[in-house]
Image (tube, rainbow, N blue to C red; front, top):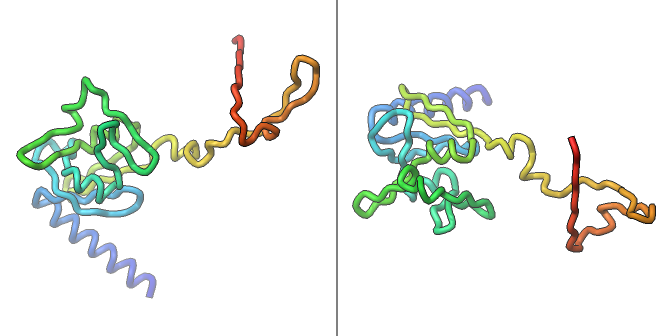
Length: 165
């Protein structure tokens, strides 16, 4: 039964991809979810999608402070704004492929089938976002009394470090 459902899913995705390749419809796979988006015609290595499709496919939104999703926000360099955002009539277009390069997010494009895949950003691959809590450690103060970082949880703390190498 599972093999049947997998086979049906592969056929459906292949059909959608074949349809996308023949039009300005592209399939964007982001966070493991496939979404059909409208793309501007242009070079195959560039993916311009509408601001609405950006939000539908990635949950990112264009805001004054940058491109944001939940508590994550990436500022767009002011000198490069035209590389990311374009207004054509009443539609705002966003260059998702250039944004992926900006945030160092791996991507792959299947030109034949019109499918773009966006992988996990480096920070996600390394578990950085999931592990924003500093590891506990213990060091002595100037009088030799040991202090642990865990002793200061919930309090503001300034750590000053220095290294010579």
